Image (cartoon, helix red, strand yellow):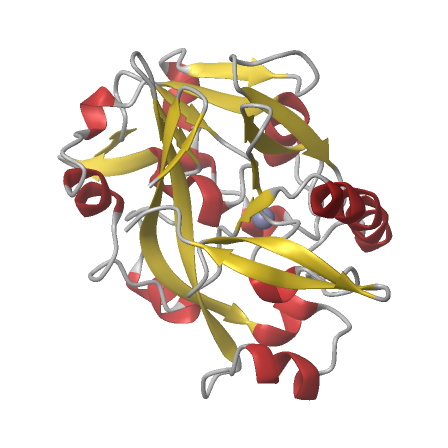
Length: 283
Ligand SMILES: [Zn+2]
């Protein structure tokens, strides 16, 4: 288990799912990406949703909540969503933690595969999964989620935040002011507007939550970006700025969607960045 400053860091896989490999790798030709992650018969690549749990003396903070469990059979089938092997309840349960104990949920952005687990069905109603938590959301992305573009409206589902808003459980993050001792944020705007990346650091070790700018170890090279991005040119610029800094300062990147690799550090050969050392956060 990784410990950074006051925080014990845990990796919790909350579901398996699959998205179209072409959409996940944008302009990269299939003969290249399929060597990294082979596709299934429907051209989907296997992925997971992976949350980061940070435990200190007085906080239990989750970063993102994955696909959750509110899925119709039709959508489960399209996205190949499975929660039998991994799910939030058993992930927390294995650590002896109940959902009532979570104090804070940091939502990187409001796409369904990142905040679907914010809420759940209970007795025919949608209720907060973490009844005692504050749910921290980036303002710009919440605004976009309420008024999405035609391109990304399929990625937002109101059921993931409406009941939280009604119950006054949402806290807005601007992404520029300090959050908590040992946790800062970086905002990026290429994948979606105002995506929040928590950075956990004690000055010696730094863990960067990759969210959808570096969702897997295969997405480290600068041009390997998703076709889902609302501004792919900006994503490339953002990666081109971030990667040299991450390498210089030996940051550990947390891969939210990588089926196999929880986290890792970077190396550079010429202009090409790739995974150097795999890091097991926990499990
Ligand atoms: Zn996303």
